[in-house]
Length: 551
Ligand code: ISL
Ligand code: CA
Image (cartoon, rainbow, N blue to C red):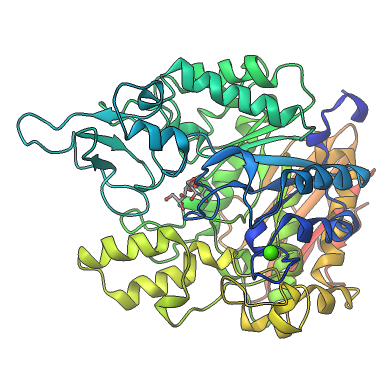
């Protein structure tokens, strides 16, 4: 297989934009599509090949757009359909595709379908949702399932005398995918967007669409693959587009069920095993950070091995639901820039498609909200209520939210040291991280050794060294607690990647099988990393490098 027969998304690097926090063009404090258009040259400079655009559809914005009230219109605060078409066109001029966020496990309770469904049982839209009558024995809901964002998952509607199911929250009712009429409407809508020339879809919690609510089987439910295959048949087949599913429950054993070449379902999935491995099993994301490098690299190795010959990996550490990587995995203080480069290098050089989240390219950090009123995220606010009611210490919860809450990724993109980090001329919808005065794109790009320059070089390296796209993957130093290293090989080309997660110096020996001679350093976050004559590698704190042979 040569580079020109590869699908574009196997050699490209993606960039996720959370529109609310990227760039505000009209001073209302909310990012918008014209703001994104004004920053396309920044993305072109970086060298990315596509944008994953978080939802811009009409929405009451209770979950910042992951609660859609009209699938065929743009939210007024983000702009218009004409703005969207201009975005696709302007990005296309820069060889950047726009991949939209498809949120079809649920819609907003403001959607006309749901409004109609609550008026009467005798309308087609009623069965677009999961309704259950009160239980005869208790006159209550079918079960005591809790919603992700707090509160019960079964919500009572007096006007029809029934409960509806809402996995995330009362204002995001689950769509009943077992209803062919609903599926037909979704496929029609998808084709409407695909015909506008978008590059594909990231599919929000697609693993939930096959759920059996009576069996309380939500993730990877009995009908999930049947529905995704039908979607592929009706919308995706034959189109030069990319699809990536958000699949928290997927494992190396189930991944090929989604993205194997003979499955005719999706191109990739987002693995979350390495993310949840750092979460407390009982307290979830608001508990202590249990990150452990051996666990982390073993999980990623399992995914590399599982998809070595079939399917395709997505590579990421950051998105709009996750903390900033330098704060979560390494150092956001003295070694912030070096850590950002180390984390980027060790993630990007594996086999798969890398996804950068806005701000990652300048090493943005977590934010610290001291006042509860500063939080904006529906999950944080909802879980606070539930967990405090269950006895959790409020300060412990706030510490957890500051460490691993979703607002960390949603503070405005830091463009410059000026008012509101150059994000808006107005008052931002969420507080800007005060460290924007020293951490911003202007400052970082003024540094030839900045994170942006390093990311640009990394993306260019992926395009120019086929071993990164095609090579196999062999983990090194499997059990080492501080070093994540691997070797990639393809048609005589070799790439050796070594990264230290230690805040102190570490020394390792280059394995015999790797050999110490003939390596050329292609990219490193320190000038002084050398393979010694004694085959020793001395790694300063958070040092990382990629060496090549035959590249
Ligand atoms: O981490 C989570 C699971 O406990 C949640 O933060 C998150 O809701 C979950 O990962 C699903 O995420 C997706 O669906 C949600 C939306 O809030 C997230 O932003 C989206 O990425 C509902 O659409
Ligand atoms: Ca705006």
